[in-house]
Amino acid sequence: MEPRGATASYDAANDSYFLRCCSQSARALRDGVAPSWAFPNQRLRVVTEDVGGAFGLKTGPYPEYLAILVAARKVGRPVHWMSNRAEAFLSDNHARDAFSDVELALDERGKFLALRVCHLGNMGAYIGAVGANIQTVNLTRCLPGMYDIPRIDIAVRCVFTNTTPTAPYRGAGRPEANFMLERVIDEAARVTGIDAVKLRRRNFIKPSAMPTRPRSARPSTAATSRPCSTRRWRSPTTTASSSAGARRPSAANIAASAFPACWSMPAVFRSKAPR
Image (cartoon, rainbow, N blue to C red; front, side, top):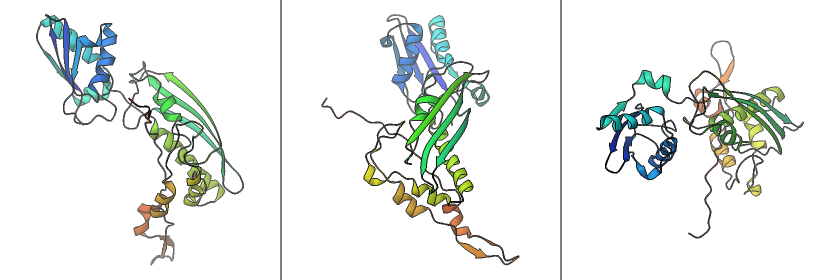
């Protein structure tokens, strides 16, 4: 993935700026940079062309963009800046610096009753472009995924440290939520002795319950987990070993059955009101 870079210029006649930058949204970047200078958005034009990868990292403003805009005004000519890989590791936003304590309650039949999450998210040395949204809103609205869990208790604490700020970078809170949920279900399967695949299928939201509104997310309008799991999840078959007579999963089924997991990602709902 290419590192960040930008070219800035200043038009003295119109007292306006031009920023050509590899970003994920020219408008979002302009709306983030212009207010930091306390001047109208119309005085800053941002153009984004081909971008060699971003995954959330290049959405918001960075200090370097402000620096080259000031430099372009000072020297009266365009100023270009390009980050190198070593610099990017030290200056670009990072992600997923978090710790979670997760508890899952089940009845004697293996039905999920409640989920409790205590989540600690690192903001870095200062707040990034989207603040604490990733470790709060984005994370919590992914729960309880595609499972029917009647009660959910989520507590999130965001802290400052001495690290690089954290921000959207490949998933933006959604991987953390899905990982913690699938991990605690695996642990529940281990403790109860219920097959991990059967435990998940037993607790999927039923198609007849759709559309449904999970306790901490937007409405769910489709139930595709059950047919997908039927096609892709199989219990490992066993074959006799030629050495000590041990039985082991066949290689053909390991990829499809060794680590079952689900992924849930809230969609963007738009109003159907006439324009």
